[in-house]
Image 1 (cartoon, chains in turn green, brown, purple):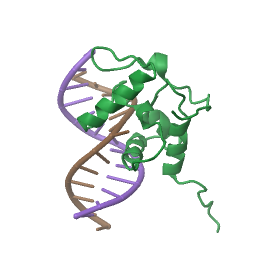
Image 2: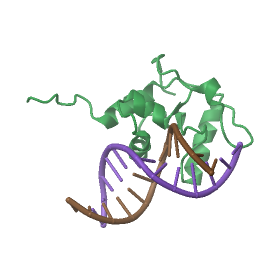
Image 3: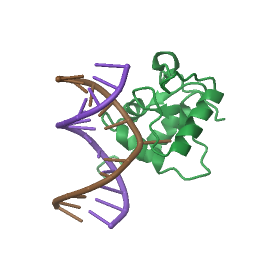
Image 4: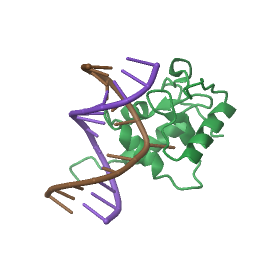
Length: 115
DNA sequence: ATCCTGACTGTTC
DNA sequence: AGAACAGCCAGGA
């Protein structure tokens, strides 16, 4: 095999990164994509998360869009995401957005234990 | 292979 | 600050 056989698929890298987001912190789709080596793959991150099956242990709720708001289409899921974040101490403003400056994950402190 | 859709984003108005 | 646009990449039909 001449080409480097991707030890991990882009999706796996995305999932690994999401799993590393510390509790009480958040990351944007574009941020995860960039860390995963996909410069303009923000949508792919969303796509990857949308492909998640029930029963996984990924803190998917810690991923939001660049505006600091929840991007889920489904109202119910969006509500759940917000609820989970608030439970971790994330504050939402009247417009339903969070302060990215305050909660954005550095991408460096890769210590994270689920739940 | 082509077209459409989508948990996105940066730029411009 | 909010809305419109175009660019992006992957799947499924």
